[in-house]
Image (cartoon, rainbow, N blue to C red):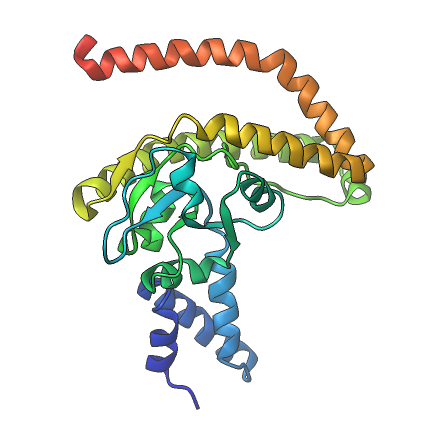
Length: 270
């Protein structure tokens, strides 16, 4: 029979606080269901790990890796990426893209078999303990430039709901999205400060040749998928039409935001 301490030590490879939380949940389930294998606890840990996601870290293990100055440097790294389209894009760029479950990233980096990884954002990266294995942090990853939570509802069920209930649901979803966006801006900023000041993480600028290389590879991968899947093409065409109208405006506004922010940071306002 596996003991509590053995379960915690097994899960602590990922994160000790996570191990304790998952174990507590596991013991609750045993109380409710009487018979439950402790391996189910490991399954929960994996599912929990996969909920936190993305952005780019570079590992420091043994002899520190030099910072990534260009795409040639990135192509020398063994880089954990999400499976599917993101992984295909990085492979098209010539990067050694490795698909790993979330729970295997930190142990793989600590063993020196993984050089770099994408994950989530400062607040979740800090909570998950990525700074134990990774010390170079590149914020500008392109494969996920925003985070949106999705709710899927059966259309037949939705159509049966009263109109006022539909409106309540839509309003709650919009409010939740805005609240989450506002929360994450501050939470990520504070977490990034802690990563730098308490854990020695260096925040780096993504090399400029990364962006055109990613966009060219993404275009090719997207077109290949569109050629094989009519629905994929329909969605891609819709997104392209939207981008044609919106991106020029949004780029202009972001230049304004960047200029004002740079002026503030350089002492233009107190």
